[in-house]
Image (cartoon, rainbow, N blue to C red):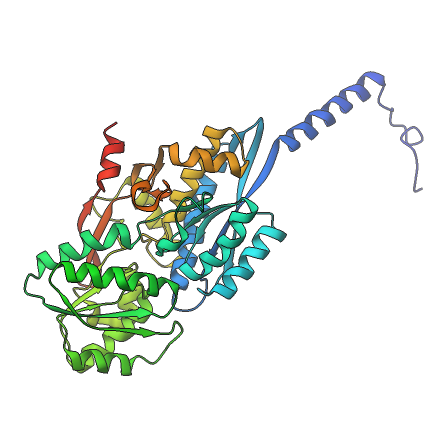
Length: 408
């Protein structure tokens, strides 16, 4: 018989005391559920195309930081506990897709903290919304145009050309004192356009003449004409500027066929695996400015652990770009704790003052003298070189501002 009451079936109804206990338990459970909120952290990065290795790695590294914090009980602020959730969007390395990703992330998902954004053009598009809406934006954009006191919600999570180029090019020049000429190959977008004058000026200061500075469109698959022009100029150095590893690998392969055998420089060089997968032996001896040997003796325990996990999970080691999202989450954790709030306005005021444990070790923010606002994460400058198809770290140097911070 269906629909019988408990009394009809012989079951005793709970008495007043038991009802009170259940009610109290319900209230406690409701309070516990209310106290544990979800804090969404956004990623805007290329998840497809030649630069997909950057986006996929950045998403994975951010997830590791979030999982670590969640396993420790989450983030506590203002009497609430927050569990972190990473939401990632493919910006396809374009301003159009960057704007679309930003609109979806901010409007639909309600993201108030972006812990990774790649590409000057998509970052600019996103920044137009994040600054207006008061959303924290961590990014890897190499353009100086996204920085300064007009952008107080924007923070850079890795070294940029203004931190990298002078020590990087100087080191290469010291290794090859006889080089006199160079050719610069840049992607024709905001990143390449902002990097070009600084690269030319820095090489000139080292006594290296720029024979040509050429452009190519991201998404290009036929690099033989570019390689032919480079080979005809026969420069001592080819600087691949902000080109991703897959594109550089394709050009190096063509240059190898044409017999060019000069100094290969990748200021935005990140993944040796992605580079050699395309270029093969043609990548040998290339210098990279945004890579690192996270398996090597100078890597921290955290970096070695993360690198091993990335190889297993996504088939790629981490690099300066991809590991930066882990560092951004760690910085955000410290700032939320200092502000005792998840209000972005309070968090952005705390960020320039916090000290936190990045994957590289203790870090903080600086760059006020250069950018007019302390929004640059302070990290060591690392130069690696391809040797037998593997990254070999040649030097790891802390900037003076980081050394001063560590010695306080």
